Length: 161
Image (tube, rainbow, N blue to C red; front, side, top):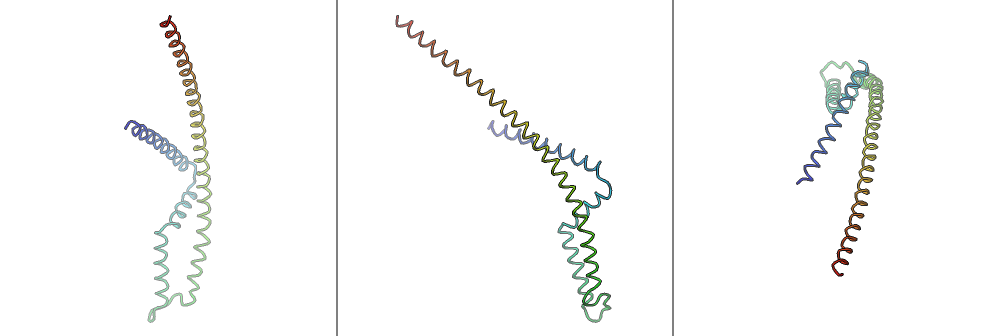
């Protein structure tokens, strides 16, 4: 049970530490990014979501049905040139937004990787220090055992005499 409590405490410490780092990165992001960059991130986030896929599929379906149904005034009859133009514009404008967002996220990922590396490096140093301490304790215990063995031997020789 005690091990579980230790593991839970350590997991909570790590989680709290990570939350603080992420909060600081988020605050830094808000301070450093300009309005246009934040808009690009929001456009990229929406462009890569199920909401976009469903809403755009609905838009395309309505567009096609409206322009195919008989008895309705077709504003973009087959071969749907206006629709092709809209799709080209959408792809032409959405791609740079997504690329800008990816570049910023890659830069943020690099910062997070550097932080993780620093944490791991510090942990490795601490583990080496603990191992050194444990080796020292093991050596002292071995010396104590050897001393106890000598005392036992001397006591046994004294009792025999």
